[in-house]
Length: 331
View 1 (cartoon, rainbow, N blue to C red):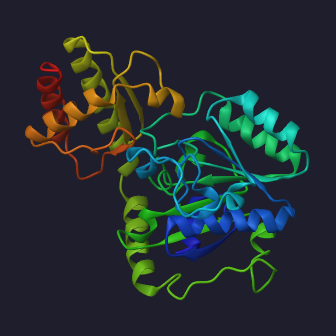
View 2 (view 1 turned 90 degrees about the vertical axis):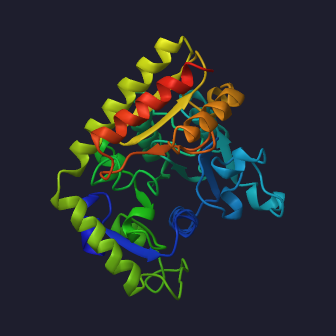
């Protein structure tokens, strides 16, 4: 498994297995702090990096669905070193580094945020994050729990041509079983015990069952034409959904990259959490129930990304488009 990950994700020279995406992100942040000997971490509004205390602040996914971006039970002291910024805003990142000189251990980011719906990085934004962290002696951590092995075999970093210092993985590399992994440059990963002073362990980390399932899944993805098929299906769905919305004269922003997608009922582009929050969630709820009545099950929350799999055929995509056309016509 480790060899497969390192071969597919060039920025990962060494990798450590764990049991979930939460563990992967929590451990990557700990390593970043240990490596840089700094405390502060930058994260972005709407990006969800698991339920570790220091990262559960202005998170996405379920926290947004239930209207509680912060969780009860998390002491304020645990998040005092977490700097939360709006995604896709260059000036905010510059200001944070200027206000905290030589204090920021790193930036953790979903390269394509998928936990407040789905919005894409603006051209040059990920390159900017790579540049400013390198200049400041901080680490760039890509949370690819969602995008890893989904947007390309090498994840979002392959698709955008960015090499982060560390990468967090989960979901797909377990072939459906609980798994997580984090990796990066060898000198950074060597900070982990037993070679270094940063502790991380887990009884079930790298357990044979999850590893066997994950190896089978990754080998299957590598040998078949999965990503071109997913791109074709995604493009077909995007074109059909946009056409259906236009025909119904309903303002919809349909964001998509590869097999990931999300529709927002708003006339304005959605680039970050603030934009997503301005969408018409009541109309989305009606759309969800209408689609369910048409026997199409989409994510029940406005703040969840949708996914296409290689099991979805062109017929399935067309059925989805036709159902959307019927439902949108009644909204």
